[in-house]
Image (tube, rainbow, N blue to C red; front, top):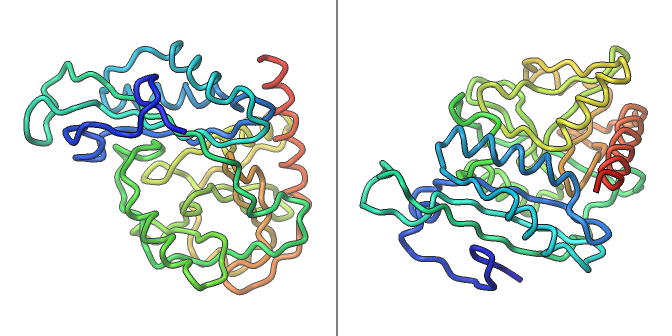
Length: 278
């Protein structure tokens, strides 16, 4: 089911700048028990993206109500929200100013794969040959320009892989094509810095905050691709998978799971706290 600007619809004008130029943002929101999870975090990230792109959207309370209504009555589902600058008022890249932002909301059934952290099923991850371009102006944002990720996902066809780790154009590890990446060893957890490119995921933020409170802060740093060859434990995160341990990374089996289990406990507590606040 889909809505455009709060009304049931499945069409937008061809002049929409999201369609024309990728001029917009999106959020993928997991819903459980008829409620969107971590809704305020999603809205905060969306608000930050609007400020950075100078999209004049302000109706966040109304949007929160629409998201809550779309999730109501659904035991598990995924909501995808797209917010564009709206229809172009003239031809060309430069906005005139005063465009009316457009919100597009879709509700999808909860996917059945891959399994959660306790699943015995192998979760295999490769290294993508597609590099992410460095652009600090867009780094961290959930913007609509996703062709690099599209190409990375196409590489998975027939490869028996669930995900692919992507590197920046200068060879540093950034994360999965649709996830954030954590590495772990006896010194604790590490995750790549996203100052140059990549997306700052909701679950990534939750785990970094939880680790700080637990006195075991995540080290956010540049990680060279060569470090993947000797990592002892790794897991990926997003709002659908939660915390998903990697069983095989670039053909090498990883058996350690202790940090992933700890991270899953932190995430479960976050879900409980979010439900209590709701």
